[in-house]
Image (tube, rainbow, N blue to C red; front, side):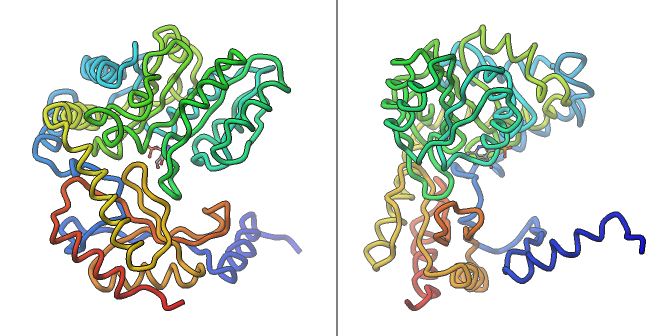
Length: 380
Ligand SMILES: Cc1ncc(COP(=O)(O)O)c(C=O)c1O
């Protein structure tokens, strides 16, 4: 009997359904009346008039699309302006903008992890790092979470060229990587350090200059950062920051740069406006951190288990995947949007609801969010 080409998908769907792991899209209305603690808009800039104005002006001036690859027609003066200002702000020699943070991670790992080299990757790293490791010609060794000792052992055993890659702040629990110790391990073995600062830019370091700036590692000739423009900067896109020779190499070797249409001018203009806004209002970064600390403090005081947040991500443990889903749904019904993490997205099998602090939350909104979370919490 002949089978249609996609019949196998039905089996996959049934398995997913049985395990309660079906994902569906929930379109968001432009004017929804919900308190949002699930977005990554840490500084509340995505709807700031300066940022939407910067995006609109860029679209009017440069067009809706970049028109081609960055190497052909897709580099506008606006792209280079953003690269210059972003590098200077974060303390790096140079920067290169990509169409997403995902593409920036693929670029850094594939172009800097050639055949014969070793990539040492933290077990808690973001999926885009995992995929970058899979695409790179280097061999990848995944090491236990936040373990400089395991990193040291991996580099020592390999002996050849090496690169260590880590999130600066991990998406699931919001804990920070031990960057100083990782850099020391790298330096002991002549390895490069690549840090994904997606959750650190705009939140950590002086005025939001990021985790590497805070650790005194920004601008070092053996350190590279990747960032997204879609969280604190409220726009879209990504970037790699590092020594100028690394950036020149990426222009020539990174396939997600060469074979991808340049970032849309509106996204560039929005990110640039957000960066300038952050420079003018450096206290936004500390405010996002203090909102996170307050959410954490009040929820743990009420008996909930949560890792102390190092940036703006606050994860609260739920007793089971079903309880996490029900908790998030009850919050939504009460007007509060929170994230929900459950296996297989969490490697340790522990389900959580996940809150992202925002610098623009008022005390009243924080009170209301905490009240809703406590009122809807699963009974143990
Ligand atoms: C740690 C981390 N790295 C990379 C990315 C990807 O960034 P983007 O959404 O810009 O592709 C994300 C965002 O989801 C992230 O959380």
